[in-house]
Amino acid sequence: MGRRLAAAVHVTHPETNEPLILQPGDEPDETVAAVITNPAAWEPDEDADGEDGDGDAGAKTDTETKPRSRTRKQADE
Image (cartoon, rainbow, N blue to C red; front, side, top):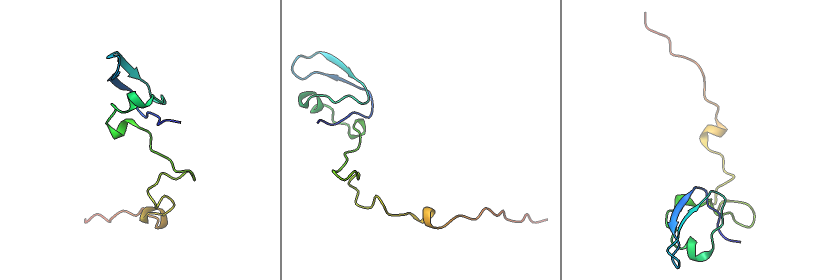
């Protein structure tokens, strides 16, 4: 299975010089995929276990572990 596009892409087919418009979710063949060089055009790669490969996918950030207080400062009168 090839990589899947996350955004619409306009490219010229490298063999036929035909203009192509590829839509999000499309999986272009290897020859067309080779000319799509913008990494933002692709959906993130997933490992076999479903993680995105950043290594700390399950780690909590400070905002998830510590709730923020919702109190306001008192105005000086």
